[in-house]
Length: 131
Figure 1 (spheres, helix red, strand yellow):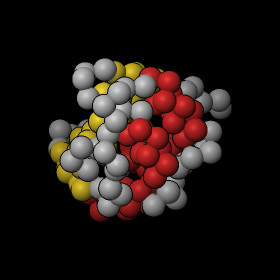
Figure 2 (tube, one colour; figure 1 turned 135 degrees about the vertical axis):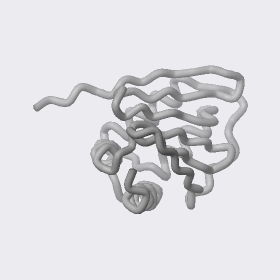
Figure 3 (cartoon, rainbow, N blue to C red; figure 1 turned 180 degrees about the vertical axis):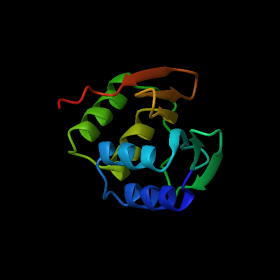
Figure 4 (spheres, helix red, strand yellow; figure 1 turned 120 degrees about the vertical axis):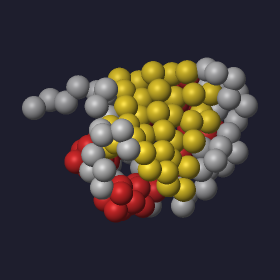
């Protein structure tokens, strides 16, 4: 796993400079299989294809997570990110407002699972890419 590349991607994403499909492509190229984002601790854990792990602190500090989970709210944030009408800083703001405390992005599995504070979940499959 290329931790230097992971830090570069992570910093660019938090600064709002990357579109999510670019993050996915670059993370895969850096050897990342999945990553877990914990808004409560402001940390991400990256899991490599060879079983390695790497933890990084977010420079972007998430707002307190709403106690009420809103599936509608997280889906709206996801659709905004997919359409590139919002970037990661706004996605984090909308996600925490929707009660998302953490999410796990399974890059090779092509899905993300979003978690609420009371164990609620929303599973989002990656949109199919037209070639």
